[in-house]
Image 1: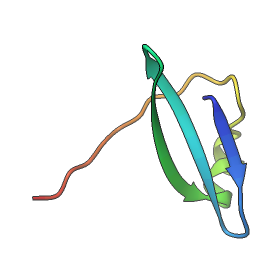
Image 2: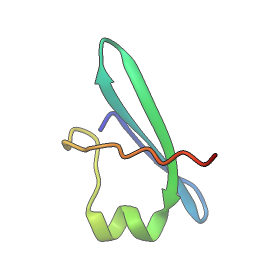
Image 3: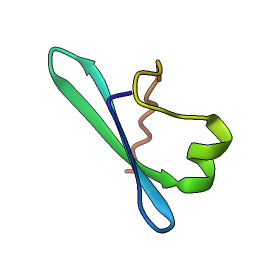
Image 4: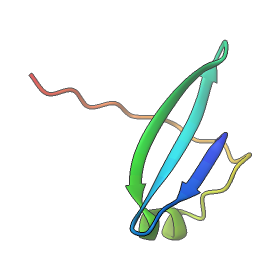
Length: 51
């Protein structure tokens, strides 16, 4: 985890997936707290696509 920036209700989180490529997501602040996310933690990104 390279970034966790909380806003009023949601947080922006960033994960470095290698070679300087980052995946960013917007999740609730509650989810950040429940998961105990912080910069430096290991994380896995799951991407769901709609067709």
